[in-house]
Amino acid sequence: MKMITYSDFQKIDIRVGTIIKAEIFKEAKQPAFKMSIDFGPLGVKKTSAQITDLYQPEHIIGMQVTAVVNFPPKQIANIMSECLVLGIVDANQKVTLLNPNTAVENGLKIS
Image (cartoon, rainbow, N blue to C red; front, side, top):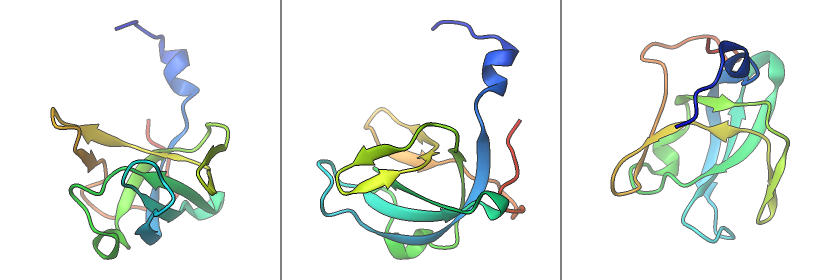
């Protein structure tokens, strides 16, 4: 793996947000959810995530997650993804979401 500098890391804007809407993303090529995430002062951002193996939409509403919020928007099927939710991918490609173990203010930066 290529090493990066601390200044490279500082370019990545990772924030905490709360999932306020989640539903099955029927139009996606791979099983996924469409989500709206509240990042406090940054507003609500939409995205999709392939997390259907371990989660159900109704169980993740209200969950805080971490996401990269400074990638350019990307068209995914019929939505414009505005952030990248972070997770841990196991050997079977199942994703476990990264989230704080105590509630924090939406929009706080990870450093």
